[in-house]
Length: 207
Image 1: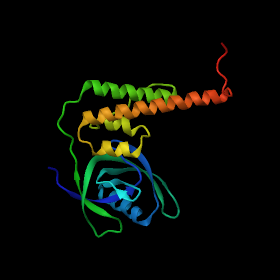
Image 2: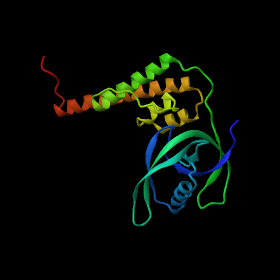
Image 3: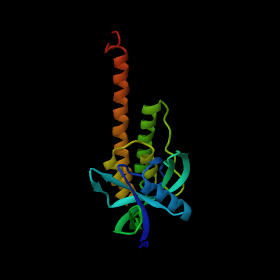
């Protein structure tokens, strides 16, 4: 079992997945301190979902990848990248920001179902085509499970993403991603069809 280590917590109403890069606006003094401490120590921190007053038990260890902007009053915009799911344990401290003992969560040792993987990629291509007109495969970086790579590149509901983060079986995740992406592609297709109808004032083609 992996050893628990103390990491600073960055609670947000979002889910960061391993391999996903995301821009974060850091404006509170305590989180600016977290940013400074992690950069100086080359240490990760943990993004954990906090939604409607409830905090998730599993977050994602992340690293600051680059500074995008710094304002005169000290606020920063940074790009962070998810590393690994972690289970959040006992509080740490004392710090200006919250911290906790966090234990990395390893995936189960299962053989990836090629059919599920192909179905997830196909669903991703459908989403890309519905959104941009051009199908494309998800970018999968070395060491990142396909399920996380595909889900992290699309705006999916927070509850779905949290379930993926907490799930340790790649095949279960692939099935969930396939279904979520299929629903997203269908919704995008319906929205485009509605936009086309609106552009013609609701008139259909001539018989």
